[in-house]
Length: 149
Image 1 (spheres, rainbow, N blue to C red):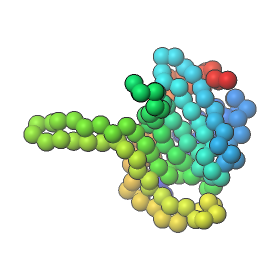
Image 2 (cartoon, helix red, strand yellow):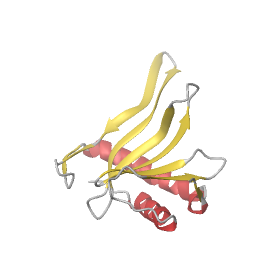
Image 3 (cartoon, rainbow, N blue to C red):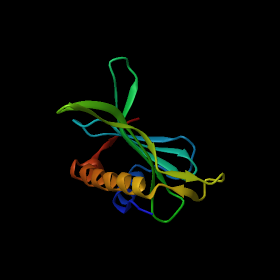
Image 4 (cartoon, rainbow, N blue to C red):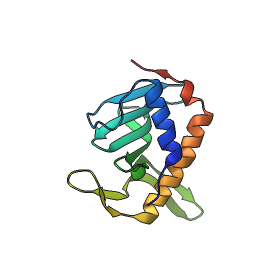
């Protein structure tokens, strides 16, 4: 399985810095601001699922995640679970290309402790994206970000 050590180290560092408990599955969130970038969130979804996301509000006031990557954290190394990005369509040459949407790349056991099914190619793709994003977040200075209260 593909793991995301860069993202794991970054989020662990941010959680430690802002005294935010990870992996508790209580729905709590850590929201950081680092202008001029969109806010960065880290959320405890359910036990062993942690979401990392940027978001903005669209013209109707609805929250749009761009992107949101969810990680399975029960194993020592974080594993990509899903990704969500806005759906976009582009006309290139003589055909339409689309991307984005929601993609789940793993399924969990009923007790949320193990991955029971994995789309290994999808997991690799999401993991490569997440590791590149972690590098970008570090370069953008998120370790010096301010916590939103």
